[in-house]
Length: 269
Image (cartoon, rainbow, N blue to C red; front, top):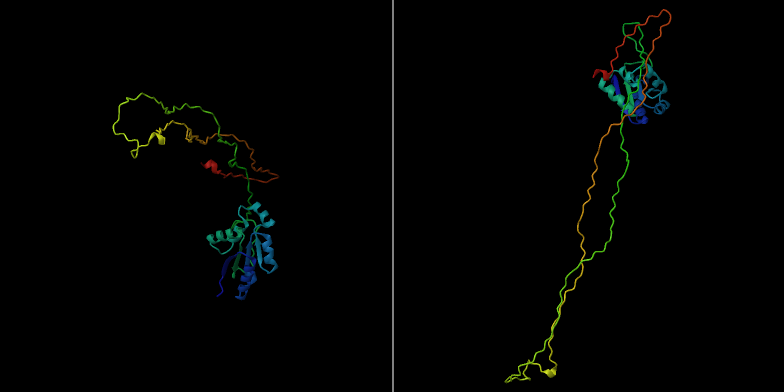
């Protein structure tokens, strides 16, 4: 079934050209098809392989037409089509993103879209043209840069320290005293378990003393805390701004009436 209006988008010129072949087989005429692209090299690819009418938003002639209009060419072209405002906005975004927009209107006939035509008031012979005035505004941007660096190094130092440690030691004092010379009855030098003097009896006594040694252990004696604090200061910056003004010069018998209806957004606050 043949539809009056077809609007489709494509990522590649080849896919768009294949679709136009299908549409021609369905009975659509080449004169009913319009292609919108962003860049001229993409338009050249479509033109080299077809007779389609291609409109390019980035062509130099199209950009020059913006001097007399506040609308982009793609917006004026889409407004002249039988599309809803939502469709116009969506297809304009698709074209700006680099996709190809195909518009087919079987009832449009030989009509073409003029990118540089001036606006004309309805039911009037007065021609109206628009000239935009521009001025520069200050926009403050801030960037973060490194202005300094704090480096804290930890190193080991050595110091000699003397400490007095009291130590104890045993000394043996042997004192010999005369015996009582009392007679011990029944003392047997040969009794088992009793060692005789001939066998080398001896008394073994341990002599003990304390000796000091040093054990080193690391302990936490100090903590270093580093904090960064953000301070704010006001800097005054000066810049020269340019602004376009108009000067109306009357020559001959011309009569000019100037009506100022401009209201700046910052003055409304």
